[in-house]
Length: 309
Ligand SMILES: Nc1ncnc2c1ncn2[C@@H]1O[C@H](COP(=O)(O)OP(=O)(O)O)[C@@H](O)[C@H]1O
Ligand SMILES: *[C@@H]1O[C@H](CO)[C@@H](O)[C@H](O)[C@H]1NC(C)=O
Image (cartoon, rainbow, N blue to C red):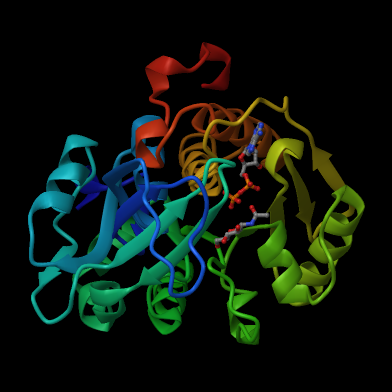
């Protein structure tokens, strides 16, 4: 098994994105003409896994998709190990219907489909690999109980964990705060979880402190063009990690690019300070917002400056 050890294992979602671009979002009952349609590969879990792989991490995905080979091929094309991606015909493929207007705003309906069938059986099959991976990453686009179980399996085996509570659920159980090394979310998720507004660095620091109180060991809250804040239970003062704001073309999946990069850095540079990893993850995610699409906008190692490695 040792020669099979992965840098990063992601237990999470695969989604097929159905994207329509239209001048504006339709109202209820209305039909409007759009000017472009495309099908893309998405799902937070898969996105994060592919960004980590593109930076050079040896990755495996633990997921479930509708019986079809498209997504498996997409993982393979990105160098992701797919033995733990189960296929089923008992549910439709996880799908995200996305409408994007000319201002770049969107409206999204997610139907998790096959992602909800991922459970204990698949986790047990992946356990030998989970035991030896350097980093495990989970989100909330699969059953929360499956994420919790995966995070606990990793912790029992002293594997570093990242938990991205996205999409956030307001009544997230208290047990979710203590099961990761890094709890990483965006402004709206931090707001929903803590119940207080998170619109600037100061408010993000306060929300981060509340998340530490709930049991998190470290917290990162991403702030779009402003970068992110980093808090650690062992250091009383929160850190603001700014970034160089760029003109965004499409910010879809920026948070997933950030988390995939963070997973890569945690696996490859285990002693690097978390603020330095966050600074570099800001830079990677900043590149991803400058091209259209989700995974299609994620940079490869060769596209990035050498100082990031
Ligand atoms: N306009 C931007 N300029 C530079 N970096 C950006 C920009 N937008 C997003 N980022 C980077 O992407 C990260 C995640 O973005 P954010 O909007 O917080 O996440 P989400 O995709 O979850 O909404 C930010 O922390 C930052 O590093
Ligand atoms: C945060 O992520 C969620 C998806 O989990 C997304 O719907 C929301 O728009 C994001 N918020 C910000 C401020 O980027």
